[in-house]
Image (cartoon, rainbow, N blue to C red):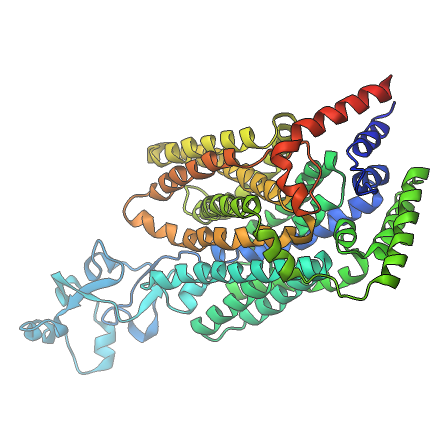
Length: 578
């Protein structure tokens, strides 16, 4: 018996008699890695790669840049350069936003200044800046700043001595994401996955291009919020998990996410070669407008169509996939599709009342204590995972080494992590791998904070390993979240949990401010927070052997039926082998 035949028989064995229809069995026959699925992988990877770049643009557009006070007494004719030979006596050793007080602004020292003053501008220009022109102890705040370069919006909008404005860009972006995930979840469950797959990148692309023409800081901040609130969402992960059968959904989604992270890693190189923030933003936002052609290239999710009583469209897509993959469906599968179309036709003749609205379905599902508890648990896990994941990427540019390569490395580590995810999820289920991943994450983050500066390579290595644990746990929690909720409200439930979880990502951009107290303090905080999902994951059901639930009853029974379902499948497989 071939592997594919075994897969089909296994999924057919999981069929529930009361439903009379088995989608997993049909998906197994269509195959998980045919031409159709591979094209879908590439399309989602292109979309998600550039969305990931845009989602973390502020890592470089609001990057730290060296600056100092402008000293007009020593910088004639606006010929200001960051490096100056006189800085050791005109600027203090500490406090970059302060300068030494010139004698003309220090009471009782006017006579000293007059010794250096000549009314003739030509003679004044020839005078050299000397230490006698400045107080040796008294300092004053900067009036103007001189930056080492003007590639970052920090320099262009003069944010050097206002660190809260720098971190506020990332915070506002993540606040917008909270609204985005609520809206996208509702739209995805009400109108389909395709609407979000196509619509959100277009909104992000348009807002991002407008943002690159911002005339001041506040205009940029408003567009930042609009971009984040109208775009993004996790429809790609949901669609990839729903596109294939139970046995291959984790592998398929891991490949999809790996391709997206590989593409996102190029942002480090783009930022390196296109350092000016306006040009950089146009480079990463403009390609998202190409996604408009996905209207013709991407089909709606079959599982969502069946769950929302749109069987005619679903059957057409199933036949399209079979044709593209050059697959002939079995007689049993064809019979199922024929019967469901006939039943749909009869139902349409008898049905007069409109279908239940999405909001009604969501509130109805939340009346279940089991579903409500899962939303709370997953929301708490998302809070921790998003805080760590986003914070680790943002602080990567502050770790020793090239900040562009550090960022790319943070993205690329997700690829081996996804391979590990696919292997461990299949063998060890869901709970144990998540717990182990965040244990490693906690230990290595804290260890990286206390490595001596002379061993910077060791600090980077520990940080990367910790980030791998964070990446593993983040993706694993997304998979578990998708698997424990019913199809009719899956994206909404996941996004409700993410809405709370996004508060963690809102706090993440503020973590670089902790370096003022201790260089490795952000890593210590990440390590402590990692213990949260490590413990909370034990209260969630292990869904590694279960089909995606289509309704609340199926979702509620995950905790109780996994063992019996698995035993039933094993018995059916043994009978088939005999």
